[in-house]
Length: 338
Image (cartoon, rainbow, N blue to C red):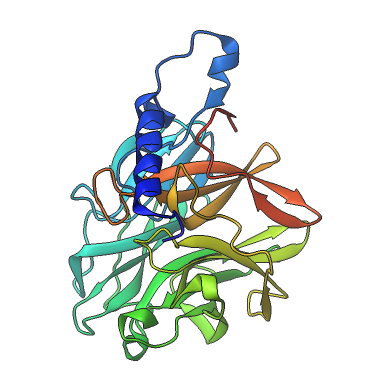
C-alpha cells in the first residue's frame, strides 16, 4: 500500500478522523467572521458518494454519483460546489433490460435548453455484464427516463462497458467516452471514444481506442475518463489501479482530438494518496469564475473498501502551470471557496 506500514496507516486514520470531527464541507458550523465564511474544508460530502460528476444550470450545481442509499442515481444540489443538499433519485426507474443494484458512474450533459441526457452504467440482464444506458429529462435533476429496448454500449466480450462520459467539443460536436470493463475478465481495459448524434441518443460511426493500462502506477486497469479543453488543448483525465486500494490515483493525457492520438503525461499520477485521503480518483472537472476545480472521491486513510463513510467527495483546485494541470490536493485544510 502506498500509505505505508499498518502503524502509519492507523496514524493517518486518526488524523483524518480528527479533521472530520472538526467539521467539513456541507456539515460545517456557520462561521463567525466574514473571512471564515469564504473558506471551506474537505470533504464536501461526507457520506458514501462515489464517482461524482456535476453540471451547472443557472445558479445551481447538480451532482450525480454511483448508487447509494437505495437510489439508482443520487442527485445533490449546491449553490457553490461546497454545500450540498440531497435532491432525490435522478433515475428512479430503470429500463426493462436492466437489473437494479449496480448503477454506476452517472454523468449528465445539457443538450439544449430544457433537454438533458444522462449516461450511466447498469447491470445488463441479457449479457450478464455491466452496460451503458442513456436517459433524458426536461430538468437537470430529472427524473430521467430511458425508453430504450437495450443498452447503448455493452461490449460483453470485452468484460462489459462502464464509466460513460459525455463531452461537447469547441466545434459543437458531441462525444462519448467509456471503458471496457476488461479487468472483470482479465483482459486489457481500454478508454474508448465515439461520436454521438445531436440528440445524444445514438452513437455515430465507429468507436476508437484511446488509451489502456501501460504504466506501473496504473496496475491492471484505467477507468473513469473525461475530456476537458483548456487554452485550446484537449486533456483526457482518467483514474487507474484498484478502486478499493490506496494505489488508486488520477492521471491525464494530451490528445490531438476526441479520437486521439493521446499521449500520457510523464508526471502522472497528478492526484494520489496522502496522509488525509486514500485512493483519490474517478474525478470530474468544473470551472467557476475562471478557476478550475476537481471533484473526486477518496477514502479515509485505513478505511479503503468500507461503506461507512465510504468514498467521500473532495473538491480541490487545479492550477495550470506551463499548460499542465497541477492538482492542489488532497487538501484537508481551509481553502478559499470557489
